Length: 319
Image (cartoon, rainbow, N blue to C red; front, side):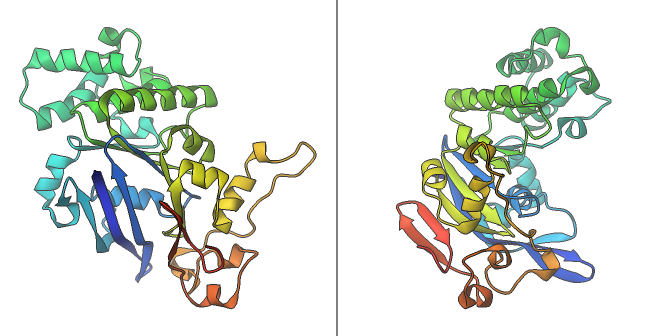
C-alpha cells in the first residue's frame, strides 16, 4: 500500500522577474516501511521536491501543478493549520546540517520536547522520560545528562542523532532526510546510516532519503529515483540502477565512482554542468552533456519508457 504518492509535481520560483520551474512532472511513491532515495547533482531539484511535500518551499516559490497524496489526503489542498498538524507528527524532516537546524539557546530536552508538547497532551514527567528514551534509541550515551546540554556541546554525529530523535518524537509514518550525513566523516556517516536501518526495521517507518552520494544509496535504498535538472530521468530498484543502469546520466554517475575505475585509469567525469534554471534547453535537459544526442533529444523532453517491472527511463535513444 502506498503511504506517499507524488504525481506530476511542478514547482517554480520567481527569479529576476521571471518564473522558472525547478521541478517538472515529478512522480514517485513510497510504500509503508520502504526507503526511496532521490539522487542527483546539486541543483537538480531534490531538496525542492522534499520541501514541497511539507509545503515548506520559500516565499518566492509555488507548487503550480500536481498532487501529493499522503494517507489518502492531498497535501496540496490542505490549509496551513492542517499542515501544521502533519508536520512533525505524521511526517518529520531531518535537514543536512544539524548545527544550523538546532536552536543554540535551547537545551536538547527543550528541542525534543517541542514536537511532543505541540502535538500531544502529556504530563511534564512523561515528556522527560520520553526524551531520555528517544536519546537512548538513537545511541546518545548518558542521555540523562545530555538532555540538558546545548547543541554546541555535542559532536557533529551526536547532533545528527538528536535530529533523528526529534524526528521520531511523535512516531511519524514518514521521515524525509535531506542529505543528513553530508557534513559527517565516513565512520560517523556509516553509524548514522546503520541507525536509520535499525530504527526503520523496528518501527516500520517509511524513509524518503535525499542524497548525491551513490554509496549511501547502495547501503539503504529499496527504490531509487535519479534526478537531473528538475526531472526524474530513471527510476527502479537499487539492483536495477546499480547493475542495469539505462540512462546516460545514471551511467555517468556510476562511472565516476572511484571503485569502478582501474588502478591506472583516470576517473571518468560527465562533461559540462547542470543547466541554469533560466536557461534550460528546450528538449532533454541532459542532451548538451550526452554522447548519444540526436535531433529528437534537442527538440523535446522524452517520456518514460518501461524497461521491466518498476524500471523506467526517460530517454529517446534507450528503452
